Length: 193
Ligand code: GRF
Image 1 (cartoon, rainbow, N blue to C red):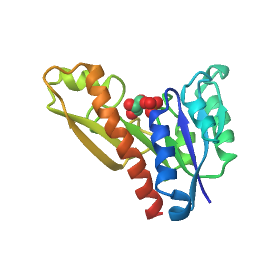
Image 2: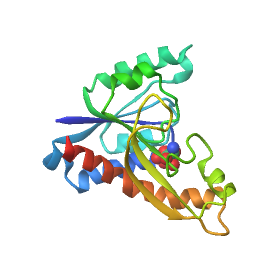
Image 3: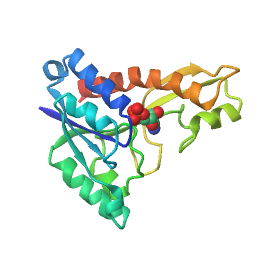
């Protein structure tokens, strides 16, 4: 079995979309893959309950318990490595990972970022796209490298920016595309490897 470990920090709607697609599209039969665990750096992440309700292992590694990023990443890697993952999926995981962590999962670590990279890496992507007068915005799934929100692009989807958009309305339009794109990109990765 190819184990997939999903890292979250919040609501986990992307994680939920991936879990749903894995069942609906029979990833176990087609790719020999399963969602082995969902790990959060926040105990209050809403996605944990969703994962538990699906019978998926969950774990919390609270970043606040660690003095340095290196110490946190080491503890996180210990939990993740317990599942011998073929793929580690960042799904709204809001921590910057150390080069040590990133390098140890080279080629099997992916992220979703709510902009059309290389435009708008970092935070507040939707407001920044509106402020820049963009007519399209979107989402990118990419391999994670040591540079934040860079790395080879695996898939993108675009949405229009409408004249009355606020950051919230644009975020909602982008998020609905995230839920389609991320499972599709992961299925593609699984079928290619
Ligand atoms: C998504 O927009 C993701 O791209 C971003 O944070 C949001 C997470 O949403 N970086 P969820 O936790 O998957 O619901």
